[in-house]
Length: 234
Image (tube, rainbow, N blue to C red; front, side, top):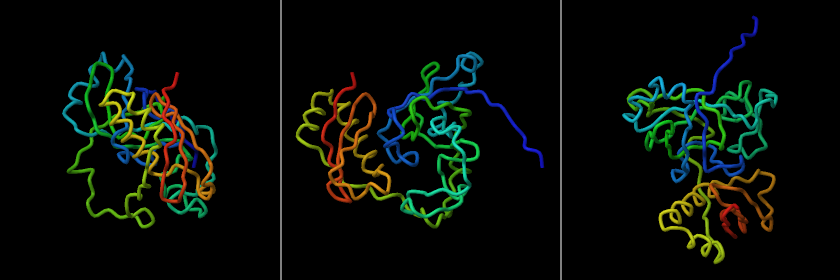
């Protein structure tokens, strides 16, 4: 059977809190404090492609895993839910390394402002190319009796605490931003972004850029996160 090839155009680009792959939630809506917007191509804005979009509370986004594009897919992957040691077929997972690096996420629609579609709960890296936008239809898309054996329940969040330095960093922010950034870190770091092979390294200091901040933290125990500092990225 001959392999068919298709070409797709990017219709929008994501501007997200997540500037690096590390610490991005592994599924959408696990970090509702995460904010992003889609910069829609003016070609589609001028043709009215966003007209009526505000009537939906949630959207399906089809996108490209652009940070891993070009990586070969072996057919079997090691999902974090299985401890990162057990292999399973890629089509049984939502791994980013796929035959075609395409992802699908449901996000909350906050507003439409010209060419910007503001969303919450996105699990998307800044700069992600968007291939399509569709409204989420709860009467069709929500399957209440659906099952999945090895990912049957939502992940358990780790307990996140903040050092005096990190709290002082937060208190320098406006009240609404302080509360959002604190919640964003609790929701993102609480999902334990560490690779499985690093989970016995209590002294290791991790760092990532989230939103406009450089964040440093440790895992003093398996079930806790200790945020060391939150510094504005200059």
